[in-house]
Picture 1: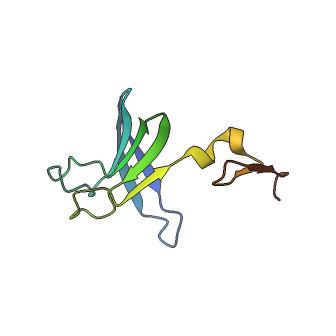
Picture 2 (picture 1 turned 180 degrees about the horizontal axis):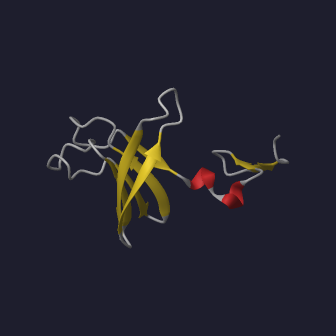
Length: 102
């Protein structure tokens, strides 16, 4: 899958927009904002944002510094699962349930 999307600026510069290139397959979903990249790719070909499934977990991987070979952030999205809404899980495995917050 390959696609592009224009992202509108929500701040003080409403005329500015950002072109996003999106590519994906069964292994990953990658996003490359036009003019951005990552160290291991040629200019205009790097994807600094990547979603992947790794050891059963959905992860968001970000290369926030084009001069750094390794990702600057790897975020496990387990805590964002719909099934966890209203539950808090502690390091000892115990959970606490609570109602929705307003």
